[in-house]
Length: 411
Image (cartoon, rainbow, N blue to C red):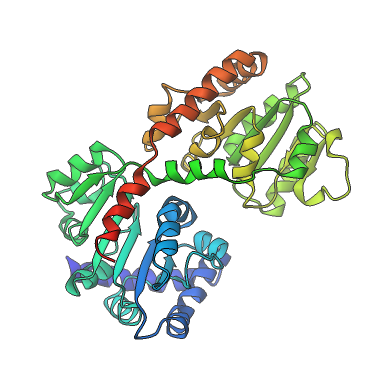
C-alpha cells in the first residue's frame, strides 16, 4: 500500500507542476517548494534546537496560533520552523514573528521527508487538525521525534476508518498523542486501537477569546457605521451574496451593511458592487471620503474581518449556502453577536452545537429575510442571542492550556 501511495504522490506532483503553468495559486506553491530547502539551510544550523509547527493553510494556522505563541514565548532558546501546505496560508503569514523559518512543506515523498527532517532535526513537532502525511510521519516515528496532532476532528466516513485505509491508520498511529476537538473523534480513534488521545476541545476558542484582549478599533468602520445598526457579512461566496444582495436592495430601513467576500479578485468585487442598488463603497476607495454617506461597504482586502466583527449588530458567515465549507463562526460569536449561516454545516460540530445558542441556519431567501427582519426589529432578541454566543465561547476555552502542558513535558 505504501508503494502505491508513493507512486501516486509522484504522479500527482507531476500533474500539479504541469497545472501550475496555467494556475497562479498552484504556481506559487510549486515555486515556493523549490525554495524550501535553501531557506531552511540559511536559517537552521546543526547545533540549533528546533520545534516544528505544520499547518495546511491559514485556517489551521489561526487554530494553532495560541499554542505557537505560548511556545515561542516560553522557549526562546529554540528556533521555530513553521511550514504550510497551501499558498493561502504561506503567502499571508510568511513574515509572521512566531517562527524563525517559514516555508512550504515539500511534497510527501520519502526523499523530501528525509531531507526536510535532516535539516530541521526537530526536538518536538506539532501538526494541526487534518495534516496527516505518511512519509513525514513515518520518518519522524523512525527517528523517535515526539509528534502530536492538535485540534483534530474525525468523521466515520474518513479513510482511516474504512477497510481499505490501513496505510492511513498506520500513519495516524505514528503520532505520539492526538488532541481531539470532541468525544466522537476520540471514540473513532479508540475504534482503530489508538488510545493516546485527549479531548482538549478546539484551540480556536482560545484564539478568538484573545481577540477581546486587543484593540479592535478601525477608524474607517467607526465612520461608516456611525450610530446605525450594522450587518457584517464575512467570508461570503457568490451563493451567499445572491441572497444578501436581494435583501440589501429591497431593505427599507436605515441599516448599514459590510460585506467581506472570501474572493477579492477585482472582477468579482466589481460585479458585486454593480449588483447593489444602494450607495456602495469599496475599502480600496475610502481615502478622504465621508463614509457616513454610504450604505454598503465592500471590504476588498484581507486581514481585517475579525476586527470588523466587533462592530456587527448582526453577522452573516458565508460558505454554508453552497458547498465551499462554512467559515469561522467563532470570530463574531466572541463579540456577542447573533449569527446567521447557511444550512450546509453538518461537517462543523460547533455550528450544530450553536444552534442551541445564538445561531440561525437558513436555506433560502425567505428564511434569510425573516431572520434578518426579526433581528433588525428586536434589540432584545439581538442581545439575547448575542449573549448566548459569547457564553458559548467562554465555556469552551482551555484547549491551549492542556496542549501546552503536554508539550512542556518534552522540552
